[in-house]
Image (cartoon, rainbow, N blue to C red; front, side):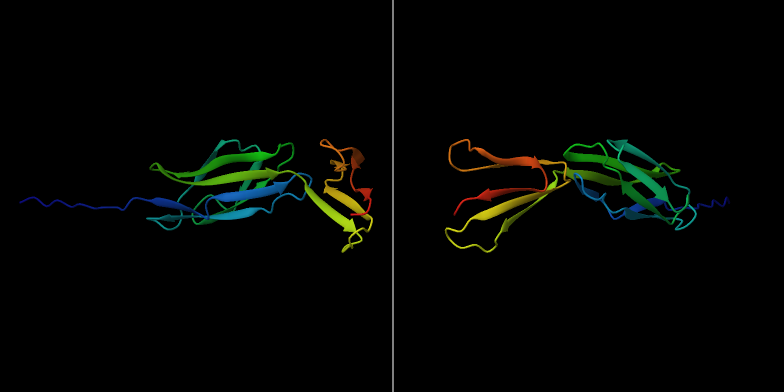
Length: 170
């Protein structure tokens, strides 16, 4: 009679949350707030050594993790310096022996600058002259006001903000 022992081990798994991550930036504005993800494992729940790699357009992303073994957190920060308007996406893959992986997608969304448009007086009454003021962020953005007197309009004010252009009675 022969005795045979079988030991089964459940496979280690990794999880990353939350996912996906989106960093939004308006040109000339404040950098996006850093975001934190949690990396966890099962079988075992602690002590799994994890490395990470990035793929895609990730030159804008930095990652600082709280430790090399599960469970831990990773803080991701976006530096949009030099990036044009558009969306840039990359994938961060966390890996343990096995091979066991879990990924999180991160996107940087770069929007055009904000523009604050005000009228003075506001409110105005019919026939009253009004001054329009555009205050772009960043202030180096050029703003041009056109009148509505012709199909292409005539420039009535242009420059880096803030800029004002008086309008005749409306």
